[in-house]
Image 1 (cartoon, rainbow, N blue to C red):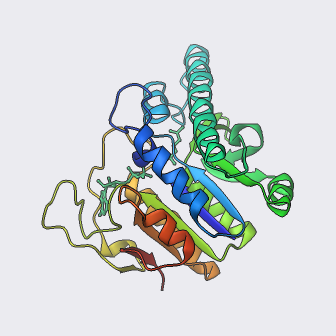
Image 2: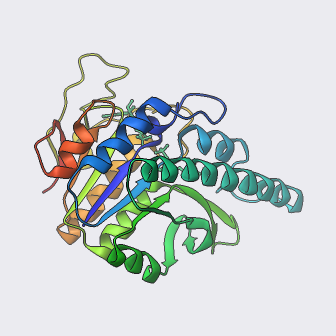
Length: 263
Ligand code: ADP
Ligand code: IPE
C-alpha cells in the first residue's frame, strides 16, 4: 500500500484569496496516478486556497471567547467544510476521469480530535474500500474537537497521513509539494538554500515564517508529522509534484529527486 499526499500548494493556487484550482497540475497529476502501476493506494490532499483563508478568517481552533464567537466560528466551520468538500469532489472526479476508482471520504463526518490531534477515527470502511480496489480520497478538513475551549479544529492532510500510516502500515508514504523536498532554509526566499536528501530531525532545517496563509504549520508541520512516523519504522519521501513525471515515477518506485525522512 502507498499513501500519497497531494499538497494544497500543487492542486490549488495556494496564495489566491479565494478558492482557485490549479487545473493544469490536477489534470497532469491525476493522469500520472492512473498511468502508474501501484497496488493499494490512498490519496490524501491538502486544502490550499479552499481551506486556509477561511479557517484563518474565522480563527477555527482558537479559544472560544463567548457565545457570539462560538456562533461565528460555527459559521466559519460550515463555510470551510463546504469549500474543502467541493475541492475533494473536484480531485476525486479528476482521478476518476483518468481511470482511477476514487471514493470520497469526508474527515469531518468520522474523525474527532482532542486538542487538535486525532483522538478517534473508525477506519473499517477505508479498509474495505481498499480491499475492493477503490482508491479512497481523503483531505485536510475542519473537525469537531473534544476540548470544550475550542470545540472545532483544523485537521491537516499531513496529520491524516501520519494517522493512516500508523494504523494501516503502508509500504510507502509520499508527500508531493511545490518544491523539491526539504531544504536547510525556505528555498522560495533564499536562492542559495540547499536540498537535504535525508532528514532525521527538525534541527536540520529552518522553516521561517512560511506563507502567511498556512494555518497548519506549512513545511515545519509536515516534517514534524513525518518524523513521528520514524518511531514506527515508517519512512517517507517528500517530492516535487510540479515536475512532470515525478508522481508517476515515485508511485512506480523509481528514484526521484527529493528528501527521505529516515533515521
Ligand atoms: P503543501 O501545501 O504542499 O502541503 P506547504 O505550503 O505546507 O505545502 O509547504 C511547502 C512550502 O514550504 C514550500 O512552498 C516552501 O516555500 C515552504 N518552506 C519553508 N521552509 C522550507 C524548507 N526548509 N524546505 C522546503 N520548503 C520550505
Ligand atoms: C488544511 O489542510 C485544512 C484546512 C485548512 C481546512 P492541509 O494543511 O493539509 O493543506 P495544505 O496542503 O497545506 O494546503
